[in-house]
Length: 335
Length: 147
Image (cartoon, rainbow over all chains, first blue to last red; front, side, top):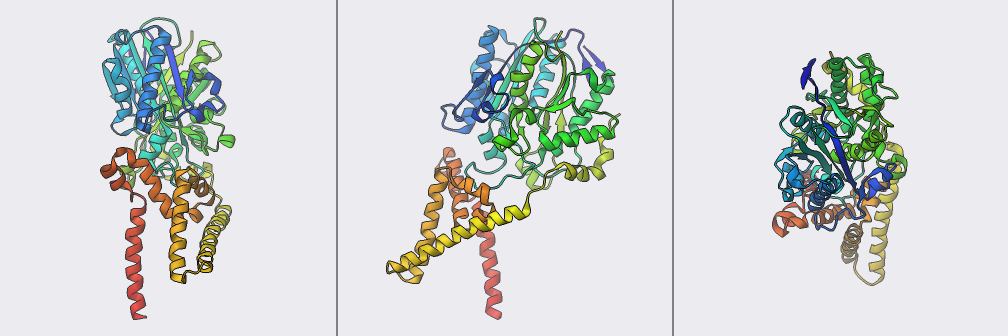
């Protein structure tokens, strides 16, 4: 493990993402990536009586799915790195608790898949552990209730607004083994260009995404074309356009290389999601469902996964604060 | 070195250039249509109750109550949010929108208990309407007194 450049870590013994598992809700399962998800639920409540309990159940089932697929027992797992969007990340707490695995609860808003993958890779790459789990989740109804309005409230959504994904994705990160390797990570800085419109999260996060991507490229001496794809978390349709414009101004052409999980997960025309998907579960389910399988099959050789987060709360918004953005880059290669 | 701060001044322009705008005219027409239908329905109910032999005051009161009930039922059966999605302010401003804001809050927060959930958060959206509606009526009342 070695530091490179300003804020990048390149692993001498790259950690391996040896297994992945994704679960999504009904709307995601009706989207363009439906066939790639490992499990989908028709009932957004998952048989529970509240949205919050449903998200915890989603997490529990996803982790169980990952353990079953990889043939591991909870006792084989040394640490779990997890987080979500709910206040005090209670969805993860209740979702993880029954496994009795030492737990790091994370909050990186929608960048949590990147944050958990970075920390899991550091734990493995630094020799602190052999087998860990990383992942995250989000639930549309729980997020709407907490960040916006009650579900049945007759408000109108703006065209820049995104649709929070009901989904979860968890990965098994191991020392050695078969699968895509994490060759480098670039943890991101908080970047805030003064956007305060909570209905345009893509605009709030795009500068952070480009800051992290450009820093990663400069630190590692790579060019955008060295990657088969650079995939941000949930910038959505207009966020991606803004990001490409910003990159262009910095002398990087990301057109055709930059894609976004929020853009991929829904069919905006048919599913009426406006600017695409968002939420921790967006990059988590698209990575563990779609991208991971593309890597395994060799259709993608090297990707830069850049989950993006908007670090605001309803309170900070009401008090007139701007929306700080963050993005963590994870360079994943299939050898 | 990426220095994003250099874009601070021009960033809002970049964002505006890439963000789709709401169709104000089309949305206004939809709001007019939906709001108009709800109000016409209310007026129709007033005539209906008067036709059934009630006084104008009684009919107005009953018309309001009927609209609130209709909105509550529509909200409970997941219909009113779709009317709001189409009609925007046309569905929110009439009394049916007010009823929707309370019933949707009640449905959402009931799981947190009848006191800290339903009781405390019933007015989370409707509360400001009542507060500023009351203040506005006082101001208008004072002006009316002197004019």
